[in-house]
Image (cartoon, rainbow, N blue to C red; front, side):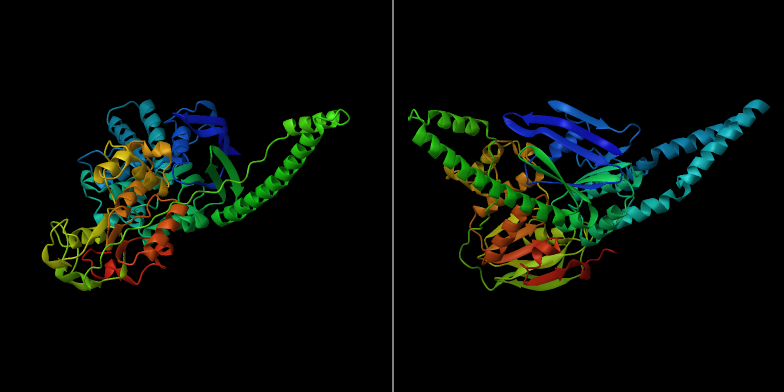
Length: 517
């Protein structure tokens, strides 16, 4: 039984075709991964099936009486509400039932016998529904899911208006999972989650009894939770059975078969053209030449399999720093309250240090303190006098500049062609280079931010979760660039598959945090 069916859906944005006569079917209980390179239109497709965008043509049909839940990271959270109050909104219909039941009890104080019998029947039905739905265990249920996704570390009585972007995303995801809709639609849910939280979500989704649609560039995560892949490429949607590894095997086989067919047809076309050229002018053979021409005209041309363009990241290097790049002495980090015990360490030239650990325990705060962006609560941090660093922040507010302007304003001595070339090497197409930063996808915006750092001469790179939003090819290129970089690297990352071949040292932030885990 299909719960969602899209038929011959087309959508264009400006001169660019996002989807063309695309079809998509979600069957009951399917766990679908929607994949594709940055900018292919995955988020656009989700907006269409959720009703935020209307397709230019085609039909999108949901099964009747279906409930859907969409992880929309742009949802507004009301200032003054606590995290717990927001999470309780997932069960608002239950609280409404409880209120209705209490109002009926109040009416029983002054009613006729006939009304009393009706009220008793109504309250009994409501009570039964509340018990069946687990209403009286809601607090425990909220605590379980909230703790699994790391909200317990923040504190459920925390005002949502004071949350970071990553913390806000966790609240929205937790609320969505608590609501248990028939269909889950998740766009990059592992961003801003640490390894433990990703593990919890992996287990939750693997055992999820209903259908879901998941957009993710985390191949390990996809492999463990999905049983169907839809690949989005050049305006088409192609369905594959199995997980991501199965998709890759079938995709590569399909490309090889297409290229074999292409080469065979090209030889046939060349043979036909040669025959036509030799025989069209001779009276005796002109009919044969015309016959071959008709065959050629009617031939359905096979295209060569498209080769996915891999971004090229390469960081400019400058003169070496001193031996000790960063020295921390009795360093305590935090804002109003300390997030760490006293830290004493050095990072030497050429080290590639990965900082891992649960979210919310101070990894980003440590980076900002080391770079002097925020002051320490106590102790000191000394930077080498000859350090030249490039910093990639985990979160960044985007301007109304185009991607082109974003780079050009920072490097005004570059020519238009040089800026375009730099952005193109990072995987941005012409239309994306000329697009506003605020309308780029998360992956495309991350590539622009990486481009800024690439154009700066550095001997030290400080990167805070740079793989968030990046597609598979971009991650591979970034990994290669960090391996080739001869300077010092300080990297916060939750993807072990990404950093394990880069790191010379791994620091576990959970060993020095003051937060209770």
